[in-house]
Image 1 (cartoon, rainbow, N blue to C red):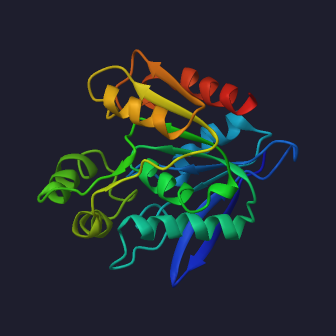
Image 2 (cartoon, rainbow, N blue to C red):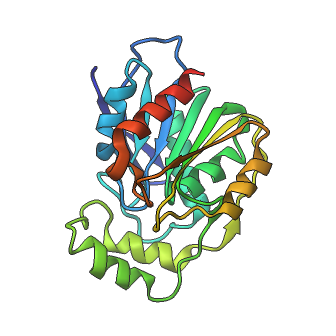
Image 3 (spheres, rainbow, N blue to C red):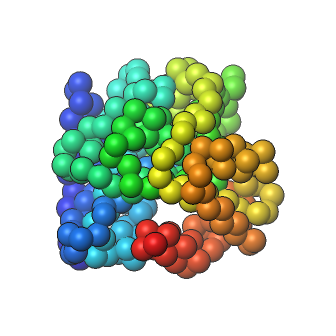
Length: 236
């Protein structure tokens, strides 16, 4: 497998993405939308696991090798990041996988580009775009990014932009494709029973997969089972 590194461009913002290319053109590709402070590089193992299926994964603005604009951190701005990568990578129809806050960006994209989506996979996040409360940015930077050495994954300017510009929005978009909801069953999961019921109303073909040894970080706690679950769903 050969993974290519590229940049998509949109209104002066460079969005970095990795593309595993296709080893089997009969397999529908998958686009991956990482979590809040994740980068494309952190999904290298999943790309290798799903080969020969082509996978494309991006680093959203302010993350990884992507640009860090001074403004532009609400939902629509991140949806434009996805749009620019889809265009640059020349993706036609694809599976859409997302984790944590990336779920809101992915659902925002799906709401306006339903014709491109083969299926949707969401990992441990409700169908909403959250407005971050006052003080969240400082807490996130000082209590998580700095102690865990992740300031290179997402710049503080981007964190502050997300707090400043994000607006609360429900994303209960009707999905006329299969939907897989991956959720942790331990404390720390961000998906409630009420969220599950909402997802069931969004697609008549909703599957729920709970991970009994996981909170929010399923990949950290149960990676082999998570990868296997994703691959099996894509093969159905």
